[in-house]
Length: 417
Image (tube, rainbow, N blue to C red; front, side, top):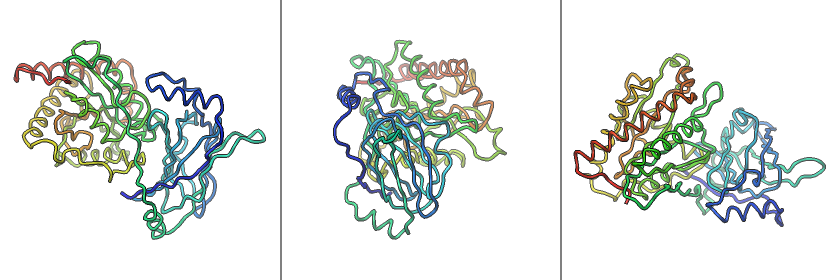
């Protein structure tokens, strides 16, 4: 994938008192930062046509911005300091002119992002922030103009500095100096990557975060494991970074949580949970489609996939990878065995496909699709506290079954050390 960085925008002189507090708070990464210290985005609107289109977003105070473009598909990405987005529901889903849609969210502590999907090749004509004046709030302004593909590619080639999303630090396990197995819980999507969206507006990124937090609490309360999450709030984490978090901390198990959706109205009766393991060959067409969709998460949030290293290249011998796949399959069967007592399962609950997030060669990994947001019954359950508690209990029990069996079979349990 090609990408470029076009640094533009408003480099504002001076710091407001709130801005100084904000930077001081961010200098202490472990200190909680009150949300009201950050600038607030309250309204967004589009204007123009297929020749020139403008995006305007109202802000509580001026900020610095940087814009860059991406090809295949055509996107414009705006990187911002951390912003609290208080925009009306479904903002960005409807496009106009050169803009098909746009999304926004947190990508790291201290940094937010707006990703604009363009209808074709575009050029960033202007990207700046206006100071508040005459009762008008501060405003972020992005002007796009239509160009041909040749010009777009030429502009990309002229840029020499590739960009990539900043890496995020994992949420630290509460206890890191003991020998208990470390479980990494991975809520899918986040930030500008919403995942699937139900017809009624519920977003996958929120559903899976709620479930991951419930599962994490269950596992921690058992006292048997150390637990960490790849994200504990609504921020984006690149797929490769999720894998690195697990491998870097010598995780004993990686559990990625998602929810699926089917676009066809004829398929709204498809429902139930599915458990996936990694495979070079998908178990069926639906598994292949899902893996392809999930593997696009980085592109959706404006990450340069070409800069990501191969996670499995030159790391471990094939024997280790084969052992890891066997452990993953063993845990997947344990999850299905427990879920059938607590939740509705898909008619084919065990599947495999080439999910990038499951490709750590030395960490047993599964991806759990909780259900389908496109199915009303599944959606009602996935947003229910009672269902979430019952299903999190089942997955937690599967973890215990996995480690108990592994201990009995091997005489040891992989620790986090």
